[in-house]
Amino acid sequence: MPEAPPSVVASHRGALTASSPTPRTSPVWAGVDVGGRRKGFHVAVVDGRRLVAGPVRLTGPAAVVEWIGPWRPRVVGVDSPCSLAEEGKTMRDCERLFSPRTLCGIRPTPSASTLARQRRKRGAAATYYEWIEHGLELYAALREAKLTAIDVFPTASWTRWLGPRRGESRARWSSRALASRHLRGVPSHLGQDGRDAIGAALTACAYTNRRYEPFGEMVVPLADDRRGPARR
Image (cartoon, rainbow, N blue to C red; front, side, top):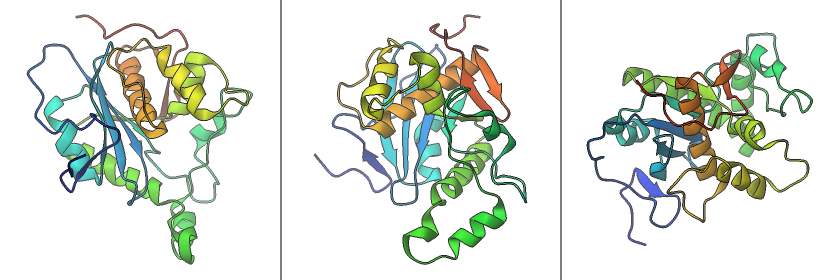
């Protein structure tokens, strides 16, 4: 595969879409799976009925804004916390609403002081929360670009659309959940990060269509959200 530009790396063969989008009349939504600085971001764009761009892997927040900006998505779903926990708390209030009994489990977001203490540790432990910091940088870049972003959790979206994982491998379960959306143009071979980027974009679409439930700051789609973009 030819070497991609430094800021853009294809997440699967044929996924790289570096050219500017063609003019569109229908709305689109973007989704971003967030990783640490080495892993970067996986980004996808959907129109509610088909995958129109990506998933691609991008190295930094500026590259994400540069890539999705020309599409002018209605909303960008970001699979990363949009804020930190309050000081003295071990997770955000919205995360206390999640459990395997209510929907699914979730990793807690630390407070600023906890994050700072983790950063001072030695070795790989110092970067344990790096993906959260990277996500906060992305939210700031999206705000600067005047792009609307929401806090989403694709695992919760897959659970709403398909049901609990119940011991099934995450890859198979999320693949079946994505297939249940009947989204056209999805490659047959996708990694988990690419699937989660698409799930984040579909959740952003559900948000625009008001087919979601707020979990505090987080947006979770309704189980029966199978509709395409709202008509005006």
